[in-house]
Image (cartoon, rainbow, N blue to C red; front, top):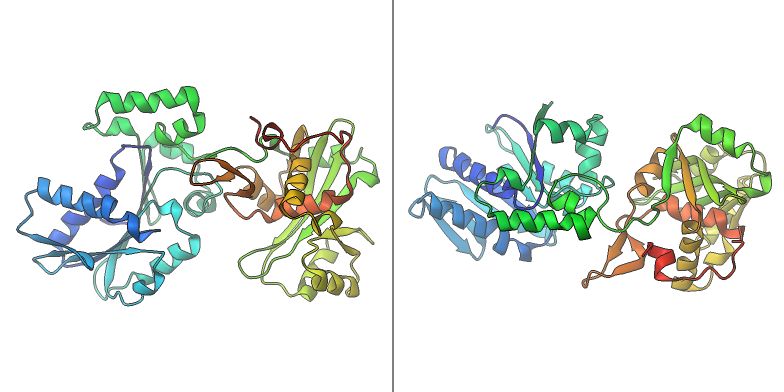
Amino acid sequence: MEFFYYLLCGGYGSGKSYSAALKIILKLATEIRTCLVVRQVFGTIRDSCYSLFQEICCSLNLENFVTFNLSPMQINFKNGSKIIFKGLDQPAKLKSIVNVSLIWIEESAEISYNAFKELIGRLRHPSLKLHLILTLNPVAKSNWVYKHFFESKNLREELLYSQRILKVGDVYYHHSTADDNGDLPESYKNTLEEMKNYDPDLYRIARLGRFGTNGVKVLPQFEVMDYELVMAEIAKIPARFHFVGLDFGFETSYDALVKVAVDDENKCLYIYDEFYKNHLTIWELAQALKKILTSNELVRCDSAEPRSIEELRRLGLNATAAKKWSEGGRHARLANLRKVKSFKKIICSSICFSTIAELQDLTFKKDKDGEIIPDEFNIDSHTLSAIEYALDSYRLNNPKFELSRKNLFGY
């Protein structure tokens, strides 16, 4: 193993987890190391990673070389190596682990980006080379894994699909599908193939092992257009159909301001400018917004932040609360989402990078029964909230547009 990161992504049954576990066993059998294996939820480890290690050790006839313990969950090698299993739902238990030189994150897309960075900090050893293995089924491009290992490196995932193995800097990329696993029965592959007919999104993930949207898109009509073309279109739209919305944030959330224009006749929403940043005081936010707002341009804000709105006013901004958000609870949230979804097209300027990142692959969350939760999404979308605030005074021409499943979810 020569790389720091090993990113193994692929479809169902492709053998990526088996490959990771086998690599770890061989590494620890020849070098004295401590390996940390983590998943988001500790309760899922025994029936996944732990059982996989048992299976591989048995097949390699290593029963006399390794000892399996359940409390605490650990595998000890006769040469002094060991594998420790932890869940990120028990973060306090990670603090006592020392001299970890190898980490495997199974189902990496399930953990947070902050947890990923915390785990990197756990890799410490005075002499051994450090390694971090990540295994996952590809997820939505809004997930931190895609942003960190592809988007931030200007690496197109199509190149990985075609070449299967890439070596970029300190990262080793590997892509696999069920076709790479010679032990899979044809019946399993046929089951994966059938997904093409009833669930194209799952087929893309499970059979093809490719990144994209996972689930029902919130805004399927969302598209990106060149900035100059967008500005040419909104120049034709009367000023009364230009709106600005602001969602407040600070620590882990963001101050998100979005400027939109509505082509009322053709029912098209244009998104043409944005501001997106966190850790700003209200004074700093006001100074930043003054640079992108025209004189006395009205900004409709999150009504849950009356103090922040008043401070913006005192600092010279024409800020007001989005009235329809101040009452109605969940129904109000659904009504505002319905308004955004009612546009035939939502066209976003190519310069609005944060809006594109949040909305292009935004999907609905599902409950434990697989049913869509109509006002919860795969990420906390600050730009969507800002757009809903911006459209607070815009009225749909069709007052009978109902909050039906079809209007919300497209089916």
